[in-house]
Length: 284
Image 1 (tube, helix red, strand yellow):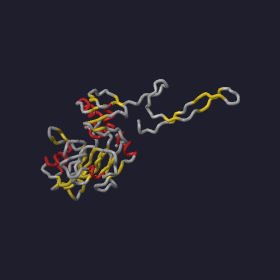
Image 2 (cartoon, helix red, strand yellow; image 1 turned 135 degrees about the vertical axis):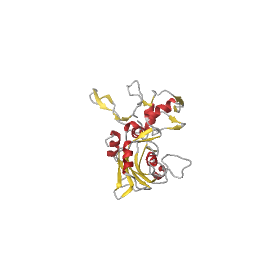
Image 3 (cartoon, rainbow, N blue to C red; image 1 turned 45 degrees about the vertical axis):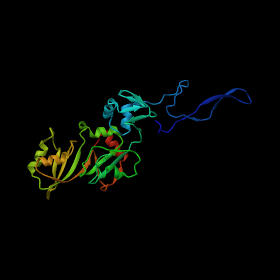
Image 4 (cartoon, helix red, strand yellow; image 1 turned 120 degrees about the vertical axis):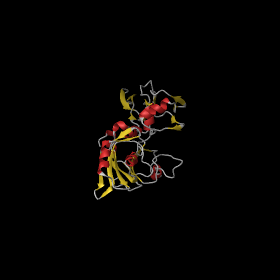
């Protein structure tokens, strides 16, 4: 890769001793070779190649699975030529474009944001006054994307990254990433309704079941803590609306092992190496 530090390569030569005339081995001048440079005569390695879907995922556009789809649809070009073959391999020097925009398999960035109300969870929205990307300002040069969605009025834990592979793992239903919400409702919730949430409620043709649910404050039964894995849009609001309640406030306090501890509303921080490792290994 271009961003890896070049390795020193030393060459050797035979030269004659000025006094004896006998050949001796001497070290020639040190030279530096760009990784992947090609020299068939000298047996140097060809540029490193990776599958096109991996390159796209590394650029942060989407997951590998989704990359296969956009390749198949002819939305990717390599060095000016449209590509539809998902088995194509490219180098990091190739000009890979998605919808005409050049992609770069840049440094991976992982950000934890405590989302405030009034911000849309998207990169660009011509109809939105504020997006979560606006909260980063100019402090993050890499182009990152929200992992999943929180609706405009929902607050709390939101992960932003340009790691397409990780995004796919955290959002695909089969991985069952745990989410915990603090829900504020318009009236006290009956125990029977809490039980119904754990038994499952059908929403839009899908049975959605809470993994755990309880009163967040025993003295205030309008506040509920609920844990679930469903990634359905506005799922918490729909669940309680189906039981006759209205959600006044919704805060996500936990997502895939991450919490908003020590991150004030509207602020963000980079994940630690330990947290990144945890996410990639799924150990949470």
